[in-house]
Image (tube, rainbow, N blue to C red):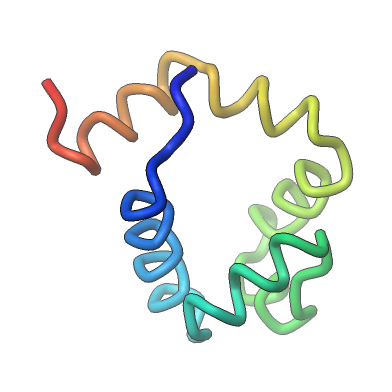
Length: 81
């Protein structure tokens, strides 16, 4: 998988932050430490538990990001055909 550019990462953080009710900067900080605000995880329901598992196990994150579904979603988000 090709790494995301800084602009692409910022766009994802902005989009996710708006959905989760937090700033992109705060979300980036929390993701970099692997410790998301409990309120964010609660708002995500079952997906919050999954995200916490992925943050605790980087190999799961790589596996998820390399899946065909994730690759297709990234292409759609960033307009690549």
